[in-house]
Image 1 (cartoon, rainbow, N blue to C red):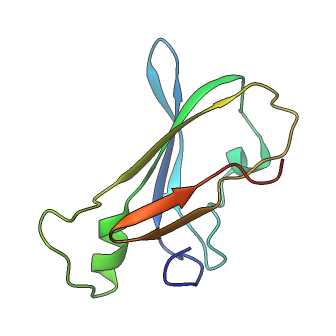
Image 2 (image 1 turned 30 degrees about the horizontal axis):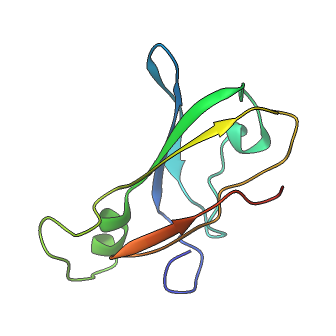
Length: 107
C-alpha cells in the first residue's frame, strides 16, 4: 500500500534461499495491490528462507514523483522464513519513498 491506496503496478520478485538463490515468482501487483501468482495461493512454497524485493523508487517514478537519483529507497528487500507451509499468511507491505513496514499477516 502506497499513499493509502493499493500499490497497483508495483514490481515484486520472490526468491527461495537455499544452496542457491532461486527466483520463484515475479510480476506486478494488480489493482487490488496483490501479486497474482500461484505462489500467492501457496503453490510451490516449501519450508525455508525467502527474500522478497519491491521496486519502490520505480513505482513512484512511474507515477511522476520527483525522487533523487539514486532514491533513498530504491528497492525494499525483506528476508523471512516459513516453517509450516500449511498455514495461511501474507506480507502486508506499506511504504513511502523514505521507508517501509512489512509484517506477517494472516497468522
